[in-house]
Length: 113
Image 1: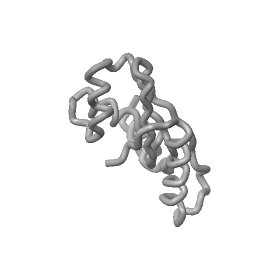
Image 2: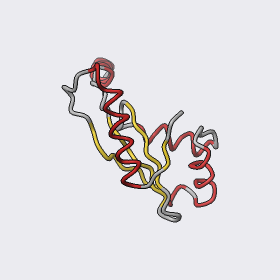
Image 3: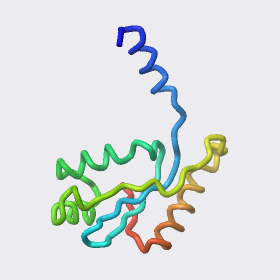
């Protein structure tokens, strides 16, 4: 890839609209589930897995399960994504509402920093 094409690709990547949504982290070995929400739900797993591998996750119960069962026992699921044209004013409230519904439905712990 030449320099100009790389620059253009990077620019397009940065200009992508956020993908607001709700996700779950599931431990297959123990059956535990954690539900989180945020922007860039399509890329959230990378940050979570990095922190867990480094042992620096702020989510204590998740980190403890990771240490006990190992990375192979975990999977990441995107549960729901807000449509791209959702009004910005209500995004955070809607995400909180949907995350609460998924938390109850899956009997999960909440991931909040």
